[in-house]
Length: 137
Image (cartoon, rainbow, N blue to C red; front, side, top):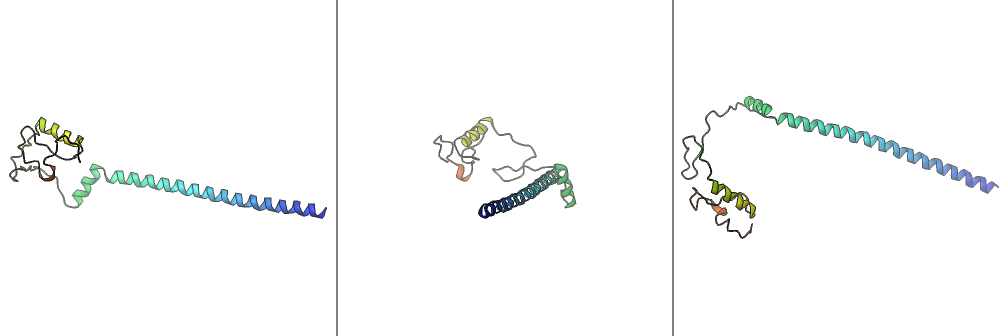
């Protein structure tokens, strides 16, 4: 009889300890969840701050505070001569734009393939010879 009472007492103490450990883990889990919520709110606040500071108006204000001013008369440079143009923008011929788009499709991004109005050989450096349709990057 004493053995049975001892076993029951031991089982009761074991259950009490197990329950205590589980309750402690529940408190830890709750604390970690609250911490996670706070960190998420802090992350969102940082994202909002970055969005505010990256707005065009805010960037303009920062530029003014650094002594920068708006460009009143933009200059465009002729790629052939390297001299400033008369201020007009020369549109890219339709075929040249289509060729450039085709070059990007075959895996050569950023390559301008000579087309209407663009003399051969002015495509520049590593991009020459691209657009042959072989698909090699």
